[in-house]
Length: 55
Image 1: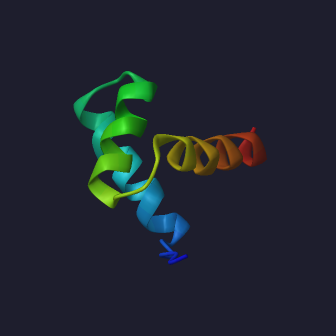
Image 2: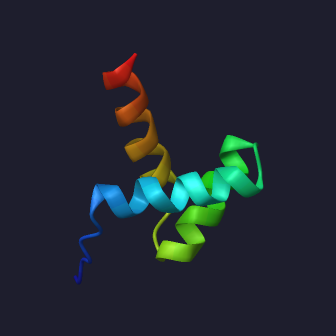
């Protein structure tokens, strides 16, 4: 099984760009995931982890 490691910063940046184009967080997560070639769930996990540690 092959895995690709994508830095958290890259996921955050892709999500931020997508969120700037569409304020719907779920749609932004899907767009970021598509751009990075990962699942939307993976994007949501990164974003939720960041949000929960800064709250």
